Length: 170
Length: 270
Image (cartoon, rainbow over all chains, first blue to last red; front, side, top):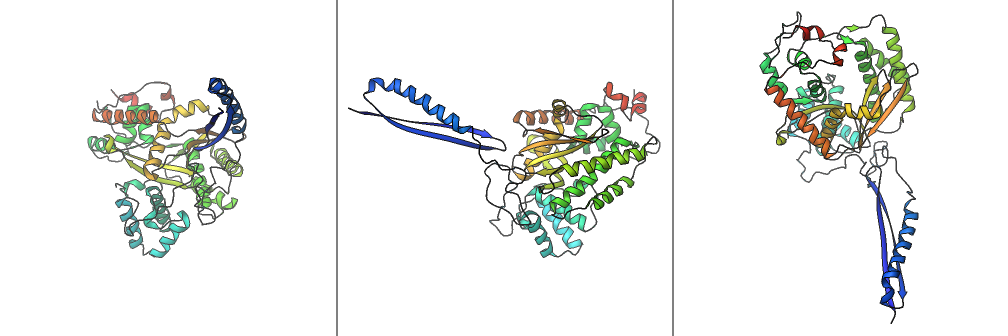
């Protein structure tokens, strides 16, 4: 009676910038009987491992982590690089009134807009241009950067003293 | 223990030392923590008593270079190219904006030339099309759930999820040594980045702009902060808070005293 021996060898290796790649080779052979299964299996394993090791050394395309998936000319490339190096993902608000940043940042942005008579549509457009996101969808870091931008536009940026006037507690 | 020091003439009228210490316990930055770990008495002079000292030439060079690079990075972030002339104008404005007196020892022209050459060299060899994620962004992270104060800091540049910090230096840095000596700062930046983006940084890079005859840039790439480094940082912050609680402002005599601005005050301490 013919015996079918089937084996898959797979190896996954890490790459820079949280990338990884894997290679898998499968083989099915027919052996005369079970008595040679262990011996054949050992040979098969060595064969598959050699094959995978030879192939997996070819890393192939590696994106430039500093540019891949980054915003280009004002429009986001939202295709995921899968390497973890992309900037903040655009997070759409589930609730139209919810802000992703802290209450303190929200109040501060609103205060800058009101006190300086800024046009809310212009501020929204700035956020879209700089981050590809609406103001409410900005995370804490993006909100902080937008605040800096607004303060600079209104001539109120005082360098490195921001935290003294912007409590950003959640 | 609180240091007994006569206030320096001309120093701003401070709030009470106790009130200032209590305030310092609620917020910690990389520079505050590093200074406290380096010399508690110097920390006391700078942050508690707030004794002002003239700016050193090296510090002024660093500030001016930093300002110019900030403008350059902002222009890349806004996708609005900055001409060499405008970059030079920004640099000169930062250079002449000397809010504090600077101790030049007759070397201002030479220092200015060196600083500009550093900027020119750095911007020429860097990739001008790579768009930063964030530039000079002030952020904070509330660590109260860990029983620790609020962390504050400003990230010079984040690009591709990588935190980049600029340093100007008179000597070529040793990569292993700078990784260790800057670990408090890099760990704090990693904490800040994670707390404010919900993501892990892809790494940290220290960009040393070296003020040699021919300027050079030494980039030290570091991996993302490990759990061990985070734990180490938390222990150090805990030590900072406990030290302030105890009013522990003892001096740390050592080699660093040779260049300390507060040597006279330190010698008067008893």
